[in-house]
Structure formats: C-alpha cells, structure tokens
Length: 115
Length: 113
Image (cartoon, rainbow over all chains, first blue to last red; front, side, top):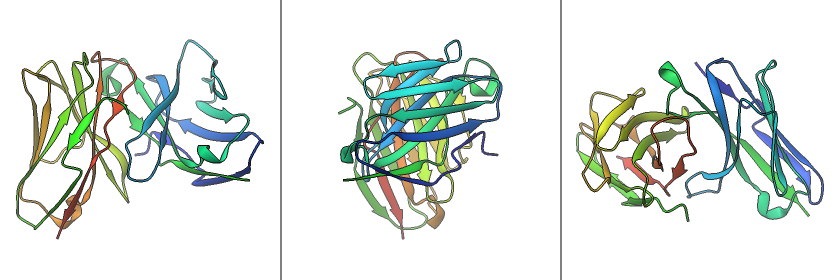
C-alpha cells in the first residue's frame, strides 16, 4: 500500500526553466514532508522540508508547496541547472501511531536538466 | 557528506549466509533508522532505534535483526540470506525519535548469489 505516490517516473526540463515535481499522499496522519535528492551509488540527500502548519517553504532555488486539502505537495526548482539532474524522492512522516518517526517514501522522479 | 557512515560499501555473499551491516550516526544524533531499497519495492523502512532502544518497526523480516550500542552505532544483521535480499541498505540518523529530518548514509549494496 503506497501511501506516498510520485506518479511521474521522469521529467525532462531545459536549463534555466522551472522544474515541478509532484507528490500525493493518502494518510491524514502525515504532518511533516520532505524532499530528498539522490545520485546513483549515493544515499538520499536532504533537500527541503515542510510542516503541515505551513503551505510553503523556500530555500534558495527550491520551494515546496503543500496543499493539505488535496493531500498534494510539489517541489519547484527555479532556475533548473544540469547539476540538478538526479532522482527526487518525496517522503512523509507523522506524530501518531504507525507514522511516528519513520519516513514513507514515494518511488521517485528522475529529473533530467538539459542544456 | 551527511556525517552518517556505513560499512561495508559493497557485500557479496551466498544464499544461506549471514552478514552484518554497520552504521555510525551523525555526531549528537540519538536515532538510527534502517531502510531497504530494492528495485520492486522502493525505499522501505525496516526499523528504528533511539538511544539504544527499539522504537519502531516496519516490514522487517524475522531473519533480520538490529541493535544500537552504547556508543550509538548500529548494526543490522541479515541471516539465512535469500536471492531476494539483494538490495541497497541505508542507515539514517536524526537527533530525536519523532518527526524530524533524517540524514542518510551512503548505503551498503548487498548482493546475494
């Protein structure tokens, strides 16, 4: 049962343009959401997070938007750079029951930024 | 560099064998988490330890066990290995046992032949 879903396995964007990666979740107990970036043969690297009390969090070129009513979050990268090419994972956790402490991951989206 | 270290980086072994994966968390972090990444299942949570005690368990097989030592490093023991156990095993750490950002190590690639 995939509680965090990334429905686009891949995304291709031209350098300088905006990359938008999407994520949906099903569990209402999730209250903390994260994006990780992963290169081949490396561990996931933390990128940005957002608490459910916010609807937007920004860090440099990266912005995460959270729509709780739609159970949807997105990661915007502006402007996109070739070095951003990697697999991006959406993850979620909560403060109650089975969601406590552990992260639930989506399957990832391969972002390719071309010159 | 996340500050989380894992050894070994690669491990090749045969079915039926037993292996131990080791993880050292970031300095100051009390929680250690283990995840398995396989091609068909994605990143799956296995188990969490906080300051030496087990705090949460995911879909971890009975053939797998883990512990966290007084110096906070952790070991994941995999026994009676099967071909399907071939995967990447990641360790992560955080400074609390609740909702928090987890920082991942580089992983151990296990190949069971």
